[in-house]
Image (tube, rainbow, N blue to C red; front, side, top):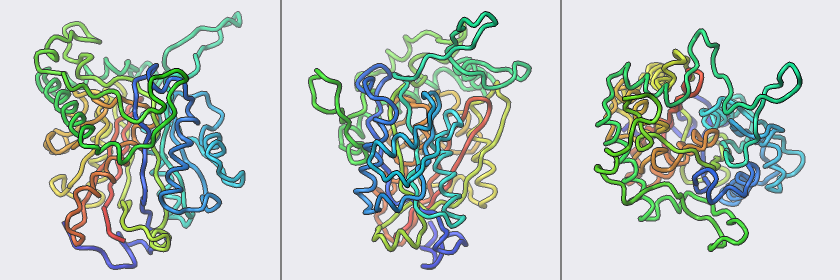
Amino acid sequence: MSNAAPSGSVHGLPEDRQPVIIAALRTPVCRANGALKHLRSHELLAPVLTALLAETGVEAAEVADVVIGNAVGAGGNVARLAALEAGLPVTVPGLTVDRQCGSGLDAIVLASRLVAAGGGTYLAGGVESISTAPLRAHRNADGEPAFFSRAQFAPHRHGDPDMGVAAENVAREYGISRARQDEFALRSHRRAVAAQASGTFARESVALPAAPGADEMSVTADDGPRPKLSEALMARFPAAFVESGTVTAGNSCFDADGAAAVVITSLARARELGAGDGLAVIGTETAGVEPRLLGIGAAAAASKLLAAQSVAAAALDLVEFNEAFASQTLACLDHLGIDALRANADGGALALGHAYGASGAVLVTRLLAQARREQADPAQEKLALAMISIAGGMGTAALFRHIRL
């Protein structure tokens, strides 16, 4: 890749306005109603915020805002609640962002734009406790509740399919076979299992207290990767959403609980803090697509972003995509001209699970960890892309450059 930029800038911005992520951490991501079911969203997130401040040396009172994505929580501004739970001063505000699955990445995007406007230092990311999400209901004319399982994402005239049906729509529209989906999902599990065994995930994770009476005192590891998953087992899964379809429980993600967040500040402040490296934010884009093909939204956003930054897909060193379904992941990668083998080096949501509002922030955490692991030559900077498709027919993408400070 290109040589390091001049000391005063990364992408044409002055160093006091160039956003850079200097730390990124996450909780273990665990199946909904599993090891983390006793923790509400703010209780998942608060330990991550505390750990980030400790790692970077940022004083809590310096934080300009806590910007957090959340999709199905109880409302009430979980960002503020988590900030106070983490012991931040009452003077530090909080803002909760809802762009459904994209919420965690969009919170980081928003914080980066605030830094570029001269805003200071931010904690940004996402959280989801599907296990403790409130029951939701419309009020009937007689005042009685009519419970529903998910919100409406688009007017019915546009089509508002359930996520699995939308994944089938994408598979059919873009010719993604069952065999390719199963192969990709199995590779995701195998990569995640290998990363877990090598301690890769442990270095980016913050342990959480286990439920009272549990065998262990704390939850330290993701519980989704399946070491015994095989081609034969993958082939046995029936179609899950459409009769004779190609999308199965095996090549779809599972619902999960988890949180992830970053410290994002200006390049100037990062250097004052003594940070050794970070992810400089080069550009971000969000795009809309047909709601019935919502899974292709990430490709639309990433296409806009790469074109705007004059970056070819082949120039990308690291790619993280939220694997809600193998069909939509493959369709987006095909559209962008990215070999599927290059994406999600340590597996993704097919193996780790999808914690809705947290998932976009998990992508960024993974990118920083991978960049640090692979940065052998300080003179070489890695380009990293995070992208996620979003309910209602949208996608968000963010482009980063890993730099030495």
